[in-house]
Length: 218
Image 1 (cartoon, helix red, strand yellow):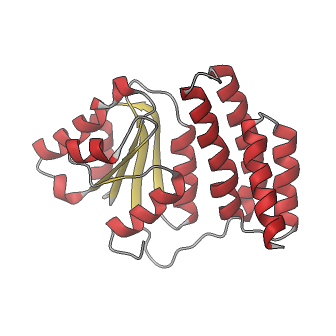
Image 2 (tube, rainbow, N blue to C red):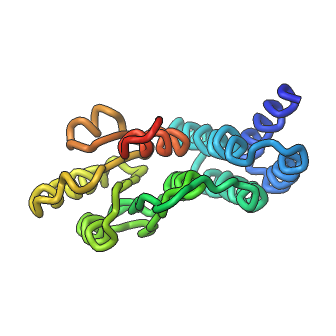
């Protein structure tokens, strides 16, 4: 059973890389039928497949059309798995404001992080993509958020993340929010440079870090 589970999840990852929507749906249904944890299948299957596709894009083996077809396969599998996610939360939920920084419209990674956070019990306010730095701060203040999560896949928009932190400092509310960043060109070194609280390399890690930032078990 364990080997079969691992094989199914690996095939799900491959279906995303292969841009095969029908296969992704078929495998997702098999995963549900076998009672395999949907969260695990999304993390190690669909999310892993998109990470691999992103790597192929960076290496110029895949281009935008291929990446979009990979994301179609990922979302097709997600439609099957999402209703089977077990929501984990007790009492008042902690609030995360999430979005893609201004100048960038790539939101696949952000959407995965959102789903994983919601599944883990967080209230997620999704601002969408191409969001000005001031908007993150404004909404975080209005909603009494705990975390501001910023994403970008473009090097040209990375300074927008730094601008969010500069605004928080100017408005003297930096200590009110934890700032978590992620995306293709982002690194721990960049997070340290701009004064972010944390860097997450993938959706599952984002959940672990969110727990850690807010004093829970990682």
